[in-house]
Amino acid sequence: MSTTTWQAVLALPVSPARDHIRGPVDALVTLVEYGDYECPFCAAAHPVVEAVQRSTGPMLAFVFRHFPLTTIHPHAEQAAEAAEAAGAQGKFWPMHDVLYANQQRLEGPDLLSYAEALGLDVGLFSIDLAEHAHAPRVREDFMSGVRSGVNGTPCFFINGVRHDGSWDVASLLAAVQRAAQVAV
Amino acid sequence: MNGTDSRQQTPLAPGSPAPPFRLRTTPEQAISPSDFAGQPVVLAFYPADWSPVCSDQMVLYQEILPEFKKHNAQLLGISVDGVWCHLAFAKNRNIRFPLLSDFEPKGEVSRAYHAYREGDGYSERALFVIDSDGSIFWSYLSPVGVNPGADGILRALEDLANRRAAA
Figure: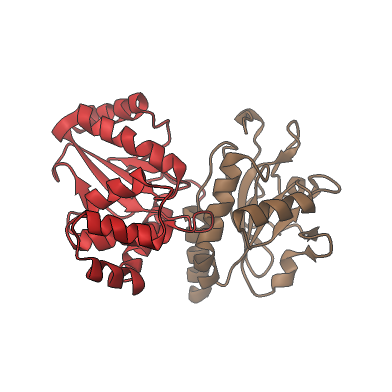
């Protein structure tokens, strides 16, 4: 028979080899977000994370992993693949920012126009989307979230432990600072 | 959904026989766990169709349905909402697994699984994995305001598969 309790911790450790990391790789605190480009709460969290990073400076590294809820967000999967396609050309974070800034415009032609504006090789980008070249990566992110106890989006992990509290700037900043004190 | 956890009870424990039942999922159709002979059945009791935490939870399960299918498991959601409410909710959120209506007598099945909040009049957020022999293999009660996610269910299904492989 199985036990019934566990802690929600990151099942797939952060790795510079696979993850998109904004900030120093060896930062004291790592904030992981599982998010969905079509989720309004994730769009609301985007400037929150930016504000927390501005406040904390180099002690914080931010990692974004995909958790597209395609059941309710029909554009989320392709947007996630678009971010990865941009990432394959070295522009993950610029595309990440553009997608959240344009959450209401995530159709195929929109994604191509963002790729063009970011100076990507649009031909390569569109082939990646058409062939779902990055779908396995998005699925890997998603399943790593499921196995880590992600229960909705956005879902944050601070130094590997799920953050169950609020994620307004003050709360998230305080949680990051607590983690930094423990980590020192 | 803001219930107090002080009234939470212990869900029916692993090893217990799963109380049999048949509940409506549409005005015309009723479903029983015994309809899925030879398959593990996952029961997800939840408080209410439209409350934010619950809908995240059922949407998440819809998203993970292929993983449950890999274990040949059948997922059933259960709340005290009526079938018309379930139909509207399922249509709105694109939920395509059965949502069962523990509506009349209200909460009877939830009570049988020790997953009913008497004062509040709705089901707990309780999860069960029922083995194909009809016994409860795993159970978990989440604080009513916390979406329990799916990792516990997947672990239980893996443990169940491992136990069968070892048998």
